[in-house]
Length: 484
Image 1 (tube, one colour):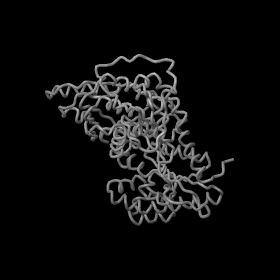
Image 2 (image 1 turned 45 degrees about the vertical axis):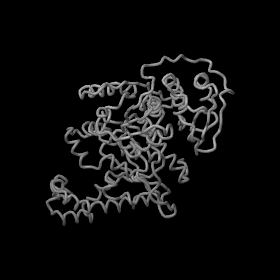
Image 3 (image 1 turned 180 degrees about the vertical axis):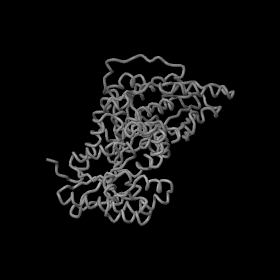
Image 4 (image 1 turned 90 degrees about the vertical axis):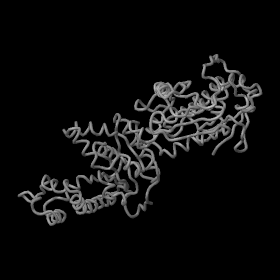
């Protein structure tokens, strides 16, 4: 649900500047954070915008987004187009702010024909809206926005949760068209740090943040090398996050922090309905080497879930006398056995890890048996009164065991951290750790299949908070009895 709020400001920009803080307080109290709130002015912002008012309207927009944009979905519109029946607020009914600061205009507080900027723009937040609005307030003809391609995002936090490029481009386009449809927009993918800024001679100004000053300077260096005029550079300050949830989040409003807040939350619905009269609700828990998967499984068990360790079942499948072991001997020969009849893992490994087809043959023998044992364990837990069973399985997706699960929960950590943990825990070299990770599905592949994602990168209490959040939500959805 969205709401259109029209601010009647007969006194124009001077009146708005004097009363913008009381106005924000009123809007915050009147409209819940779940709503999309479109704010426009009468007379319209665009009708009052000129070189002398750019700085003032910049402060107004920044105030709206910094005070309201971190708790609600706010859009300050420059035009007076009404989307639906609107509600009106008369500025004459508000008092002047007790404290107002003078505005010192900068050389870049003016109108340009063509302005540019760039960024990741993952799930637009208040900082993005300030950046985009600041650029729009300086644009009379066209605004070029470069949106970072996935290849440039490898060092970002929780890259697996970054929205697809097409979604990020659409988010920027939708916001810009809602704010001011009178300007031409060029929202394009950029494959390098510079994009159109170093090839378009018509550009006059680049807008960045205090974090991207060096990047803006680098753009001008490239333009000089190419014999092009330098761009005026307008820099905005970062918005501090009043809703920061811990030291693992950034102090500023950021997409990284927003992505961290998705951890432990539902990303998509269950893959199949649950009939509690026929068996347990099964969660497939998976993750790469050193991802913290086992610790998350143990935390879920402590909260009331049944836990089936499929990796341990894999060892049981090789026990002497088992049908699986006999099938392995029939397939690969008696050389894979020790003298006591147990599996000779180095010998078997030498066969299957040097020939992928042999590995697939082994998996086709072992995986069905592990699946059978896992389902047997899950059924035993259910008959004992456990309603939710977690299958802890490194190869959950590779073995297609997720098909038997109601949900897939994934543990992820940055690759660099995984390498570090494998080296320290397993006494491997970095090269050996990299080789192990290369043989597994990537974080991105796992997360695409995930209903819920965890990250164990930070302190243990952060992981616990994610797990408790996921379990509490699931327990409420399924109507589970609290663990005594």
